[in-house]
Image 1: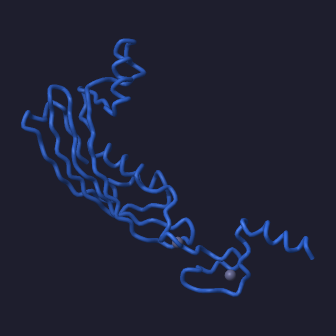
Image 2: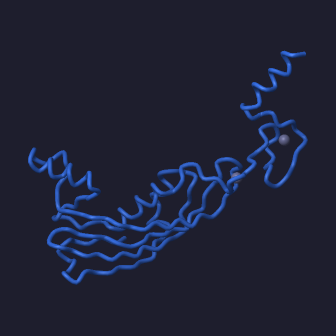
Length: 181
Ligand SMILES: [Zn+2]
Ligand SMILES: [Zn+2]
């Protein structure tokens, strides 16, 4: 997966494109079992002014998702524009008081940091952002009817003969009717 030392980025900048395998994207599955990564594509353009690095580009991935409502699987095409600013700096925990002030200010303005001694893991950073962008509770479609809570039938595909008052919002209503008898 793409990573690069800051000093390898020339004044003229650098472009990079690569295909992402399902192994590259494995973190998507680790974070949330409802997703299974199929593949993806990373495209970035790096530019450097002094020690400041700007990353522009896109990451996209094809992911198989499991609907939280009906448990059907469906494909998701997630595409995310990337725009990152990086400045050299260490972890806030290890910084001195003066440095810490600068780092906190940077963080407020959306600037991340990189360790000049180590390669910058652009690929990993992009995939983490993609993970965050994926919905926590994916649904196959807006009006997914879900599963019948009585018999387990997928109500998107079939109808069943159960009475559908399993939705807790209806319980109060059902009780009122009983009380009035
Ligand atoms: Zn569904
Ligand atoms: Zn049913």
